[in-house]
Length: 419
Image 1: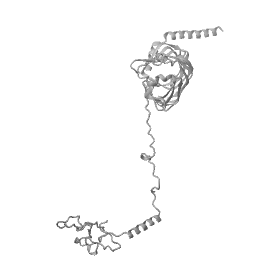
Image 2: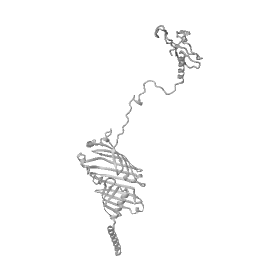
Image 3: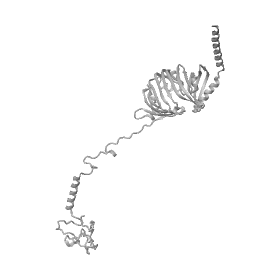
Image 4: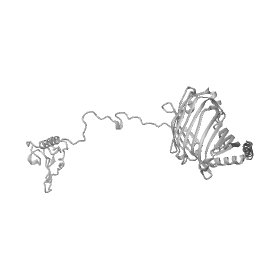
């Protein structure tokens, strides 16, 4: 029994000495520098990690006062601030792809992250990510671009992403929902809103759902409804292996409430005929830009009687179908009867119709005008020339057979000048 006590005591003493020596000799500064280097390399210098203190925690690490700073703009901006971060790594996963579990504490709220990363040289790329936060307080939301949210209510986050070939081919879902959310103050822009009697701002509905397919996130549900305005979110997000370079192709449709009436004048450039305000959200995650969406002008319908919509005239229309055979026979018979009843114009041997030629007008006698009664008129015409081409002597036309024209008592006679 005494030997067993010595054995147990020795094990406890060894563990105590090892723990104290491990805490005293733990390379906190060197490990913090390594983490800063990994974040800088993984984001291509776009982000910087700041750690207040770092200490061991079971088979992981515990960090306090952790902040993530964006360095892509003109001046650094704090994107994320965590009071306490605990990260635990599975020892057996270090032989393949590292698998870790992190618990991030933001005031009274806790975010749990379960992730697996793949090593690519000196950088690590997440291949699986699962993040959950149930009942996350609004007051615990970290400052976003210098704006701190103060209010009541909770948020639920449920994210599951699988990206074994990189974020550009990721699959999964992202869901964010709010419950009884009331924003009482927004530091930075709260003074402007308070002067307009907008705050406190209560949200009746807050629901966002994004489905990822082959690296493209499509907004399935995007609804934010409050007393100030109602926002409908649509479009998609194209992910990039470098998350900061992911492209935004989103649409925002605002329906202003009565409380937002003072802001209507500033949004007039985005107002459509449906009395809503349409915006486009473009750019990247690091550099988003929002601009008014111009309304597409639709062509007005052309009224009847104008242009191609002209109303066809009433009555029979010309058919594109060929006439029936009996109709064609009737047309030919009518044509033959009409040709038999009409006189035949003079022709040559070849059948060519000769045009009438005016007769030569003789000079009037001395002292007599062309319009006197004794002077013959000029309505006569010469007969067609004979086949041998010899001209016919011109003579006044008196209607007789010797005058070069048909006799007046001929039933088929036709004045040669009428055709």
